[in-house]
Length: 497
Image (cartoon, rainbow, N blue to C red):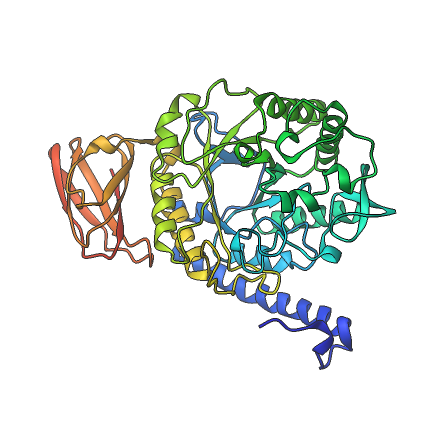
């Protein structure tokens, strides 16, 4: 339930002051409960599983396996079920509660948009869309002027002047995220999907005082308009300067550029502007490029791009199709399969067991009125909620309990037992460790091709986190039959020598 600040009464004072004090008390109580939960959690986890809750550090490509990332020098996966990208630009959204909820569930990533793009109520059928703030709640990186006439009813923007309140909030967001061990993917630009969104966009020439060429939404991200392009490059440089000391952030050039007719040449110019701005910085941020929905082979990859993002990557064909890139790949957005958990849980497990390193679920249970993720989506194109966030924590802990940078996807070790109309995937270090995920059916006997050796194995239920007891195996080599317990929808198997 959303409570208006002016309606609070009690021992905290009056009005908004009572609201802020009550919030602080709630945060303090939440922190105390979280500390107790974390202490119990660490007691219960193995040393390998405890890696799922490591604190943040600088992101880098793993030097031993460039398909993966390190955080502070340690291999890590980035896994989340996060809000719809408006945490910074929407002043109504309480990101302290939001980031605390991600941390509580062992998640370590959030994705947010820079404010060079915004949505309006009703966009894409999303209920209480965090990316569609009311005009007075929209915190834009560009400063408003004293000239009326912006399409949202406010004053026009000056793209050469930046809004101090925006950068203050962005810094506060990154600082709080770092405290919670959470990385931030900051999308610099976004495709303009329709004319209604273009009408209110702060880059639209109709909404600015700057003298630029006539630009339409379909040619915004091209090299056709030098004066407007120069303003975009200046914005990227400003972002780089502001965030040069923030280690827990990486940049994405543009969200879904394939819907906005962004050209390869424009992507390269933005990447070059960012690289030039950071060339003398002691720490350079990783850069991601969004390639396609589903799968597409990356041709002529830019050496400036560290991470390649795909959306709705199910089945995860993009991983095998681009294995020769030797760079981390991400399933960076999900949704549009209803409000239930199962389709997204299958997508997440399939992607990480197939060799992915980042999974970012779009969680519509986070709204401005429910920054703790307690809203129950009814009509939004996707789902979310605490139960799903728990499932993502189970997934992250499972994969990070392995020495996963030594592993590669290899489904050929599975010789039989794949359920009818289901699938099975394996992440493997031959003869040493095997992470296997099955979905479909309700019980199976997997036939695995393992070298001779002594192994330990257990089954895990991805929906609940329940594990079977560890089974010790002496295997002479060749086919090994592993009978599963009964399960519903999906099951994971861990085998270690």
